[in-house]
Amino acid sequence: MPKKLSKSVRRIAKSTAHLVEVEACPGSGKTTAAVARLAHLIKQAPGASIVVLSHTNATTLNFKERVDDAGLDTERVRILTCHAFALGLIRKYFRFAGLDRAPQVLSVKERNDLLRTLKPRTKPLAPVKGRTPTKGRNLSADLSKTELKRFQRIKKQRGLIDYDDMLRLAGKLVGRLHDTELKVHHLVVDEYQDCVPAQGHLIGQVANRSDTTMVLGDRLQMIYGFAGGRYTPLSEVVSQVGMRQAVEARTLNLSHRLSARTAALAMAVARPLGGPTIRTKTKGKRPELLTAPDTSGMARLVAKKIQALLAQGVPPTEIALLGRVRSLLRPAAQWLASQGTPVMLSGTGDRSGDVLDVLWLTERVEELLDFGVGVETGGNARSARLSADLQAELRECLNELSPDLDLVDDIEDRADAGTGFSHTPTEAKWSRFFKELLNITGKGLEHRYQACARAYMRLRGGVNADKVLRNTLRAWEPLCRKFDSAAEAERHARRMYSKDAVICSTIHAAKGLEWDYVFLIGVTQGVLPDRRAQTKEQLDEERRMLYTGITRAKVKLWLTHSPVKIYGVRQVYEQPSKFLDTDEVRAALKSSTRKLRA
Image (cartoon, rainbow, N blue to C red):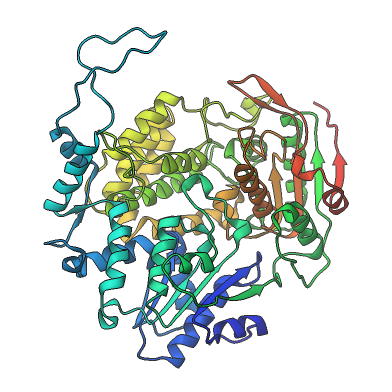
């Protein structure tokens, strides 16, 4: 077991309970505890088979690196994603799942070819008042129940499965296989809060067969609701599969990252969600709320503060600009770039952010092609399409949540602020982009990266619209041959590019990371929370997003607010986020209003 572990981590690592759920606060050593648990199991049960599941290829890669750093013998340990675990079971024991051959993941082309063979319904639709009847036969966009059953039957006959089939069949197998075939004596789940319900159900079924199961997560950092994530306590998950054992609850609430003052703000923001108390070791600096009359003024104010930090000798890699969407960060990033400060953000003259975007996109395409993750499978549509969850994730991480969310004013003099994209992709471009991703085929990281780069450039204006961007992306094509996965290539690129640059990131992408100095941009009503968040569930997720952004800072945190225009709806949001409008939050914040000369 690694040395210098806290008592809480040691107790978690050595737990003998059958079922354990660990609730961890930010910076408390959740992954350290998971690695320590793995080290303990390897030592105490040398002949046992251990499975570690995580949410994505990137988080799985991070866990593998942590295990390698700890020097653990992983001969009998499998570290993989839920869908990779499921597909491995099905391909090895397909006969137990009622299949006559090892199945292949249904490709988009195969899905569309299959759907075209089904006889379409031709019955005219009933006339709708106020609408002009369509001429000729009416081809329904959806399959009938009979057609859907036939579609499922043909899939089985041809040995094809999709993502939903994968999790469902794997769940059946878990209950049918002998212990020597299942080979899961101990189960550890990292980033448990990000599991979608189907993954949670599979985890419950495996827990029912394993000697011990431990899940670790932070429900207050569950910010992937748009991608299907739903937090379900382990007690509910296991009860759904008929288990009646009690779940041992453990807490890691001593943050080695946060100061007492930053923790106080985080707890105040999360108070309505019932978050745990966060303990800290240092008092720290009081978080500050910066306000300015407009976006340009705020951009200059933030840039000035960052330049002051750099002048004091703070490494640029210890400074981060975070926002709900990246368009919020671009004004400040462009001002910094215009002053010669390296900034890692697409659209600021430096192309490192674009390379990272394409590598991240390639990760999503890998999951789509290898496991069917992100292809709509639950409905009865006649043609394959990206799931609404994946479309939302792509919009969130590559630009905005919807085409009308250009959330920033134009800065006053773009010629002095670096170069950037001149427009937000239209809805038509997004539609073409999604279709292009669906049509990517083939294997090999280099080939998939090339296809993703072309799609990305078309989304940004065209393959020949920006020759510098095109050449930068092309330079990475041969480099992809050195890596087994896009997650490995993306991690290498991030480390290479971030050596001397101020980091700009969405809050989603920043989860799990930390910096000494953090500027949280756009804590404005209508932005955070998003103007479309209306239900309690949606508002709770927006609150968790703010909490996640706050808890990235180790030394000093600034929150910023300035009036924000939302083009398309012609509305200006002028008030700070309502999440800041409580006595407890106001007491934790230092307020600073600045009026800068134009």
